Figure 1 (cartoon, rainbow, N blue to C red):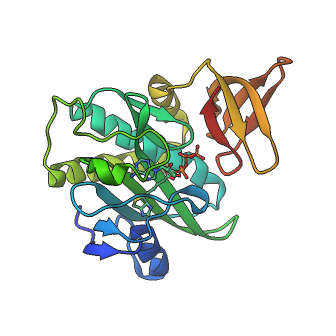
Figure 2: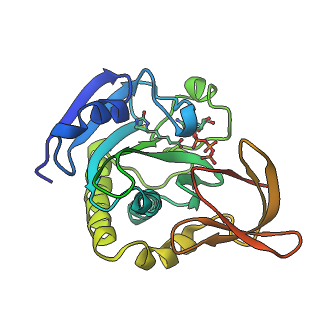
Length: 245
Ligand code: ATP
Ligand code: BTN
């Protein structure tokens, strides 16, 4: 845990900060901000990031063998955060493919992994995550889907610094295991927290909406769907958004 930590009151986006400096960072180097003025979600969406007690954190990482490994990595990140929160005593935690963390069926946290590099060679990765700790109600109203935080319906209480420490330590351990053994050892753990397994869902892409039964995650981290005719297909996280039917 001896890597540099860049801590700001306010920044546009902790992901953007590390992406702009990716050539000069060491693995595990971290940026945390108390608020973000342009917090980003997947595909240009906005991450609501008010000042105060929520966590906005990004971690620099590097992989040597091209883009392909990054999909698995982003699943591992969501899983790692979810398992740490469970270990800390927070209940109602679950995962929505590819990398959203839910609490009591509402969105608690999101993961955004951004990549710069070549398809085959070394890649710079920035692993960003936002975790709602105590979202002010008035500001949460700007979120256009049901949301959760760690304070609602909680018996567990934790200081923000302790949370950061626990998440970071577990994440670095899981990333090291992922580099050694890939996604395989994480799959049963993912399935144990997967909220939608066996359920009827829709997948939305730019081109169309597909309906079917969600069968879980394949060995590469793609989503497996059985359509109404019984045919099975896989979809990658960049392609589609998953929703319960
Ligand atoms: P997908 O299935 O494609 O990931 P998503 O709705 O989870 O869909 P993301 O791009 O992953 O979309 O996340 C951005 C969305 O998360 C926003 O459009 C908003 O609905 C929601 N959101 C934004 N800020 C917060 C927050 N602080 N807490 C919870 N949810 C948020
Ligand atoms: C999502 O669910 O779409 C992912 C949201 C990721 C939000 C975090 S907050 C810290 C980091 N900096 C950003 O701009 N985004 C990520």
